[in-house]
Length: 438
Image 1: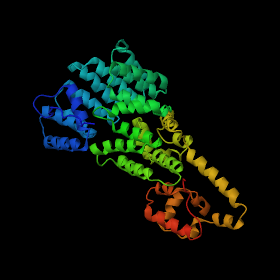
Image 2: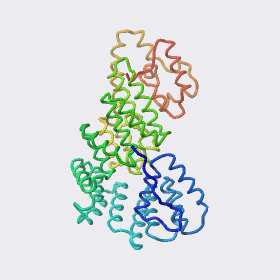
Image 3: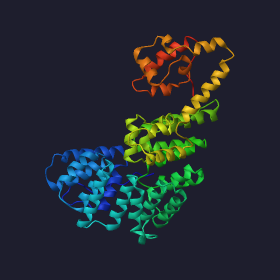
Image 4: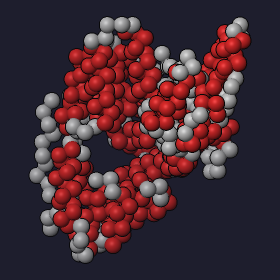
């Protein structure tokens, strides 16, 4: 795959690029780490400007780099024009200021912004805010673009998907692609829906279409690599990861996945069991930030120190709903994400309870073991830090401790590898070990 060609577009010249040129420039900048670094240097060279005209370009540049709060500050001081209000709306949307984003989108119309684009972006903003009724209302005002605008059908599909109307969403993604065959976002979300519904052949086909275009979605290549790995087509999976690392050499997940694939190629033992384990670990370690959640949901989960899919399996619906500002809408979002992975809230807790029961039944026949497992963890004479972490996890007995995995213990705040090794050494000395996911 050839690298995306550098567009002859300079954001920091006297003439501001058009909206289409800005979109093209954004795609180029985000297509590789090198491009991002070079563009970041350009932004920094202009960041101290006080010119209202330059503040506009610096603000847009900061938005492209994902520095949204700084972008808002610069754009608010820039000269009024449609580009100012549109990019200010984009930055505000990313920071969760949805009402202000809507106001700025509306203001852009006074300066000649395209009405269809503004309406669709307002719908996107309401969708991000989980106000699906308002998003639907906006889309209905431009229903005359049905079978005309690919972007209209794409945004309609995104809303339907957010509402759980998956079949309707897939139909609209397909219409969008009929109108614009290279609509990457429609291709990606259609591929992802096929992937989740178990139609792996269709998913692979759509992901391959994305991989043949520029710029390519990193997420598409990673998802395609996962599908290839599941089919034991390790060379194809490696090529997908290689494309990611070629453009983004420091991509953390791609780096780890590459090691996993290389290891899979040389496995000489129970390949199926190891593959299932790797797949499960990969899913459990997927960051919550990888999913499209409302700002409210993300903020609540962050405050609750829930950072990965695995963390969600260790909390119940009731516990989530008991948290301030976490409502039914946020709960629905979380459940949809977990259901797409064949998981559910509290699943790990249920497994631990079942494992605990099974362990108790096995050990009941050996009174000596039962006595040992029922002893307090205080008898292990652990360090203060290790004891405090076990208290946070409500681990009171040695038996409860043996039901914990390395990952569960390391997931506790301030619990590090030193404490983990200390615990493993102590329980190993009495013939016990932590639970393994194998």
